[in-house]
Each structure stands twice: as structure tokens, then as C-alpha cells.
Length: 183
Image 1: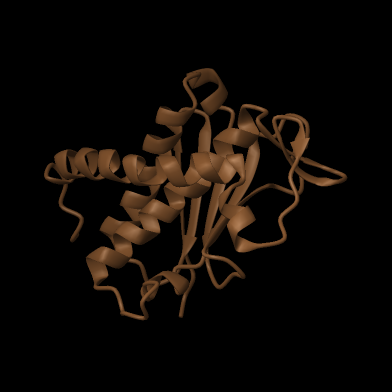
Image 2: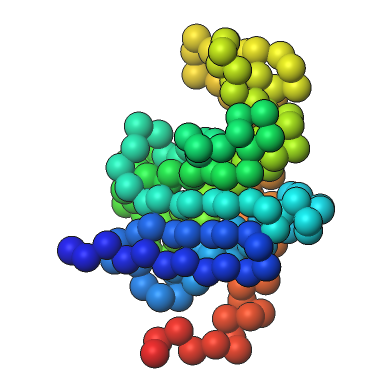
């Protein structure tokens, strides 16, 4: 299968989506989700316009991960890589296979979650240091899944993901009626 790579530049914010076999409407929704979410999370248009976000859809050890790009300045990061394992999202926590629309919503919600982490990096709340991830200057260690869900940066990401998804879906419905994605 051929790898499809889309690149849209709006303003100076650079967004790339690397995916296989996604239909045109869903690809456009992914771009729109990045733009929409970052506009909600980072108030400064000037700051947003200096960001570069590459979103990769592929197998991964987790459902999603946001990271500072290897070439970025770790103290003032502006280049990011987001990985979404869309294969992991095909089945819910009860082993039930998700329908296509439900799967797409789960992908968008996971993307929103990871973009909250991008915002945390951009705003200096989350940082990568020698000892590992630090949130607001405090290094947090995680030994159990329960501790993971108690991390302050995860609490924010899980707390915002569904609201961002719902707001985006309303926005997307209003604009998608204007465009014909089938051509």
C-alpha cells in the first residue's frame, strides 16, 4: 500500500499527517482537529504559528504519544511528533470492535489528548529533563497504572479530551456541510 502524506500550511503553523488508507474527509478532519485544538489550547496566535506538528498513524507501544521532535530545542520546543496507534483503537476496553464512526471519534479524541500534551510542552508546563518528564518543575515517577492516571499532566489531558472532541465535532459538522469530500 502506498503511504499517503498530506501537508497543509496555514499561517506559519506546519501540520503534517502521515497515514495509510484514510479517506479524504477523515484526513481533512485530522488536520482541522489539530488546528482547532491548538487554537483552543494556545491562545497566542504568534506562538501557534511557530509550531510544527507531525502526526503519524502507525503501530506503537501505546494508543498515543506526544513528544518533542529530536531536532527541537528541549527548553523551548516548537517541533513535535504525535503518534497515534489507530489499530489499538479498533477495539474498546470490553473487547468489542468499534464501528467506523465510533473508531473515528476515538482517534480524534486520542489526538486531542496528545495535543494537550503538546500544549503543555509549548507553555513550559511539561518538560523533558535528565531525570525524565517534569510537570511544573516536579519529576513524577510512575510504578503502577493507578499512579499514571494520577499524574497531573494526564489528569489535564484526560479531562480535556472529550470536551475538545465534542466542540470539534460541532465545528466539523458546520463546516463539512459546505464541502464535498467525495471528489
